[in-house]
Image 1 (cartoon, helix red, strand yellow):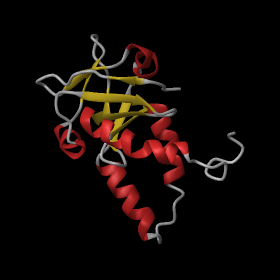
Image 2: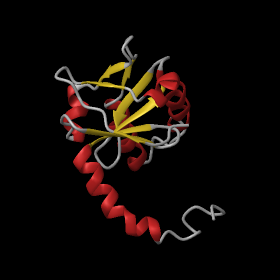
Image 3: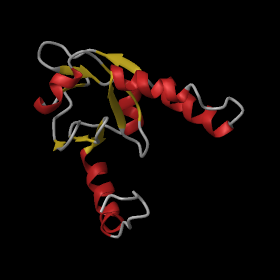
Image 4: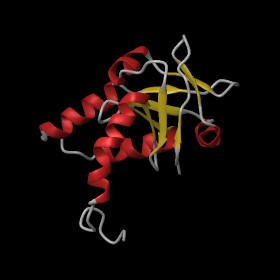
Length: 143
């Protein structure tokens, strides 16, 4: 499970060093793709394959499902960390998420999200009151 927030820097070649707590899970390979709210999603290869199995069950007749699958999968790229635990974020994904030098890499349970640091701070500030007011109906049985 991926947890926490880290603040690595993007180097001049578009690479980041994976946070130490994420390295073991991602060492065997990962898949990066467009995330919602203009971030980059990072999945273990196994998790992405599991998610793809579920996506394949979506009805082809559903325009919303087709649109989601197209956006998600057309941006997907497999990567393998190098010996220094670095991965390259493809230019198209960097552009999509507006990534510059300062990043926020967050653990989101089954995935990692890579955000531009200032975009993450803005998002977090905007969501704080909604988070504080979340009722049990949103995630039944949580509290």
